[in-house]
Image 1 (cartoon, rainbow, N blue to C red):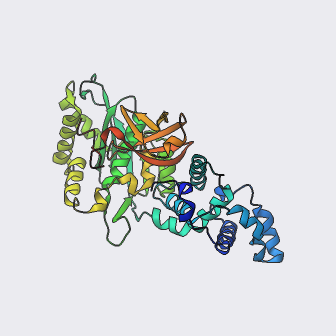
Image 2 (image 1 turned 120 degrees about the vertical axis):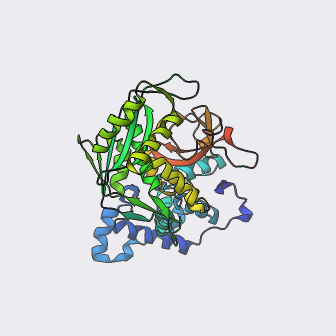
Image 3 (image 1 turned 45 degrees about the vertical axis):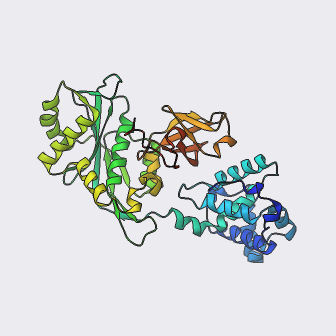
Length: 401
């Protein structure tokens, strides 16, 4: 969405009816009593006191005085309501606090008084059902265990004009088969990010088309992950939220021992291009074990290419996957851009917080997109202005530079 609802001409605005505002606030209080979004409860709402009073006086204690409603919802137009709905009911999964911060920034830019947090809280709770439908992700629960670990072959990787580096290879292996679900080649100094990316790839390759669901996809998740590499806190938290058990282990997988004794010995001492190395390893896996994860991914992508949902960014379709992407510290420049890796990521709201520190997570699907976090909470998805084409689409960068 775009536009500032506080800049809509008065002649074109419709103010919400007071009865609607009373209903929204009343239903928000009842939802809070039932335990909905306790982390978002405003300090101005004495919930414990209201709950105690309701035991004796009934649910009517949740009805606010008309004068209080008038004060809380003053200036809430249909345009503001629609903006709140768009912000809160987005697949980005913004918090109530972030929705309020964005509305406050918009109000400040328009030179009008900010909306009380309690008002935005009530509006968001009234939209909870709509939000749940917007962010729902159909998941299929498996019973298998995935093993995550590293190998460090005696090779060097040459990538572009940069100096060659000694890599580690992060693996995600289905333990019971065993079968390599994914592997990721990266410098030795980033084992945590490398392992997390291998897990990201394994989850991504397990998505498949599913009719009659909003995103057109269903995601298969394992029951358990055994890892010999400490995963990042956000990654572990995301797995827990997805119902996946994460356990640290020192156990090795026989498949990896076979790779060390065969493939690694065959390439020892060589300097390889990153893409060539990945191709050799995938071909070996396909020949020796009957399954090359990159070949399988390419075949699946070709098979499902006509399906719109499958071709979209996996982390946009399944928001928890964003927590598997590396988090990079940056800041918003005076012109509202966030610099990273020679690119500048922009969004209309970034200009509201010039010079503010942010965290950036770049998409694994396209270098043109990145998610921006403000004080630890998702703010927006931004795009690299350098990659914007004349028709408004974006280039891939990695494949084009």
